[in-house]
Length: 201
Image 1 (cartoon, rainbow, N blue to C red):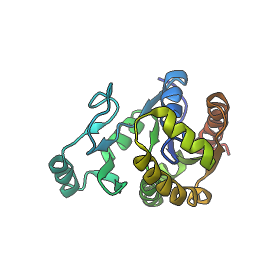
Image 2: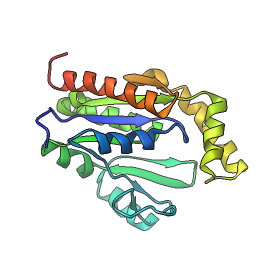
Image 3: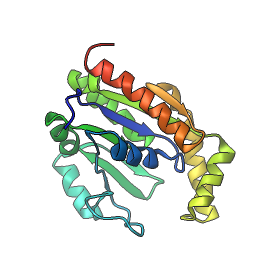
């Protein structure tokens, strides 16, 4: 475990922006980082493991956690699936000195901001980052993933246009280029986030 002050990096951006890839690489290459495992009502994609990539909940299980006020944030995504972050999935690891990174829907970031406003420690340790991608590159990436048909891609692009307008609200924006360039930009932001969390910036 690193002796660095723990930080929480909250990454958001449109589908296909590469935010999940950035999260995975940060965990793989930077000591002391783990990924917050979020919750979803969608079905697992091939290769996804329950409790590792997501907590896959039935709608009934999700409702039960909502009733227990167990979520830090949650939202409907694309009008048909719910995603959320359990409060315990963030607070408990950070209390142990663990740094965390999470990929979350733009709607969810607003809930994180509200939680941080009510918790000065979380506020000092949290940094929000938006991954900005131009329209043509975003469509190309969605087609390369080959996970969605054209109608699904069109729906995701409508959502993406709304999400891109939220970028000015974030602490930092990465103008997405190559995977290596994006990761280098993320590491620069991490250094600034750690300095702020430690009270040296």
